[in-house]
Each structure stands twice: as structure tokens, then as C-alpha cells.
Image (cartoon, rainbow, N blue to C red):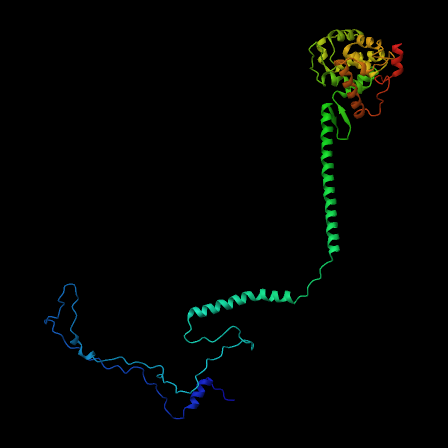
Length: 386
């Protein structure tokens, strides 16, 4: 098979020409250039025509180059001259707009001759607005095409509303109750902590309670047959656990011993190194005070009210009250309601209250409130009293 390197288009052109015919040369667009004519010689000595007005540039006369006059540039005619179509002849139609995938082109119209630009812009804006609004119109049509929903019965709607309101009320009551219980628990914890601080009690890590000077109190209370809770109540009401406390009448230390009472106790104990300044020492003061409470407990059969009243007002005052039937009907116990109002009656009430609190928090296994409850050994106290 013959291979021809000449492209098909050129090969066709070659075949269209008759063999041996010379190729047609396209006529030039412009006439050939004429040989340059010799310019006339000007006499340099001849004066040229100058401008009559100052500031103008002198130009040569129009006849300086006579050869260039009459020459015109040929005009190229790219298109044939317009010829009017005879009447009755069909006008050429505009070529149809190409289509993609054989789909009709919507929204396009041939442009009319002489149409104003603002009309085309208005038509384009209308097409854009229709294109934007078309999704909304489609949704409206879809909504219209959907079947209407069935309404619930009135009684079912009302019952649902009532159930919802009841449930909402129960939830509100639950949360209010939770808030109330939380608030009350916080108040209880705060009150409990304030009570512990007021009574000088500290809560340990294991949950046990301890009071200030608890070891010394328990040691000397056991030595003189006393309950440590009662001794602790006396110390709290006398000095609030302050070793340097001193009253206006001269009582000193934790248990507020008077000078003559402390000196009498030192004689009973046989303390040769006694000095009233030693009452500021916590251990010495607790020892002297516990001996004196043990003595009063034996005298008044371990009655907490009688012992605390005698410790505050003296044993003579309590003995005189026991002999008064208005204050003591049986001569053994006092009726606090019939006692005269004063510091001793208030002191007995405070000591009894503190005694119960210390007994509950520190020594819950020991008895409280019974006769001769101050004494740890009732039999020994009764024997000493006899």
C-alpha cells in the first residue's frame, strides 16, 4: 500500500488541479511599489517661506513634493457589496442554538433586532428570579400533594396534656424535696460542727471523739471515783478549758479553785510543794478539782445536781436547801423549780446539760441521770458517806 506523507487536505488540492497547470498566484492586495523617483534638489541659498507670526514653525510649500500628489491608497474589499434582496424572497433564518444531549434549551429566545440593552437585562433578572423561586414553588406543590394528617381526638389531647402537667409537677416536687433535704443536711452538719467547737470536741479520722485534756481528766476521775463526763462538764462551765483563766474573786485554773479551797485540798493530799501559782498548771488543777468533786460526791451520795451546786455555792448552801421542805420535799434531792433564781440555779442547769452531751458523745456506754451517777463506785461513795 502506497504511503503518502502529504496530508489529505493538501493531497485533495493537488488532485483538484489539472496536471501540468501552473499554480494560480493570488493577486497582490496593493500595487507593486514603483521605483523611487529622485527628489528635486533644493537651493540651499534660496530662502524658504517662513511663518509670518512668531512662534509658528515654517513649513515647506505644498508643491515641494509634486510627485506624491495624486497618489491614493487602494482600498481592500473583504466582502462583496451589499445587494438588496428582491421582494418575496425568504430571509435567512438564524442558526439554532446547539443542544447538549438532545435536551431542549429552556429560557432562550432569539434576540430581536433593535432590542434595548435594559430589556435584555430585565429578562435575565426575571429568569434568575424564576430559577431561585422554583425550589420554593416545588416544595409548595409537594405540600399540596401530601395527604392531610388526621387530627387527634380532643379527649386524647386533653389527657396527654394533663399527664404531662402531672409528670412535670411530680418532677418539680421531687427536686424541691431534694433541695430541702440537702439544705437541712447542710444545716445539721453546720450545727453539729458548731456544737463540737463549743464543747471543745474534735472528731478523729476513725470517727471517735476527743476532748481537750481528756487523758488527765480520765486518769484523775478514775482515781477519785468520778465519771469523766461530769468532770469535763465542770471544766467547760468554769473556765472553757483555759488554763490561764482567773475570776474576779481570785479563782484560778481550769476548775477555778479558790485560794483557801486549794490550800485545804493540798493539806488533805499532803502536797509539800504546794503553791497557789501551781493552779495555772493543767494537771495540778485537774488533780485538786477531782479530789474536791470526789469529796462532794461522797457527801451528797453522787447526786449530780447537789454536787455541782455545792461546787459553785458551797456545801453549806446546799445543806440549808435540803433542810427546807419547800426546796427539797424529801431532804435528799432538790426541786430545781422551787430554787431561787440566781447564778447557782443557772450553773446547775448548764452543768447538767453539758454532762449529758459529753456522756453521749464521749462515753455512751456509761449510765447518766440516775441517782449517784457522778460517782464511779457507788458502794464506796455510800460507805464513805456513812
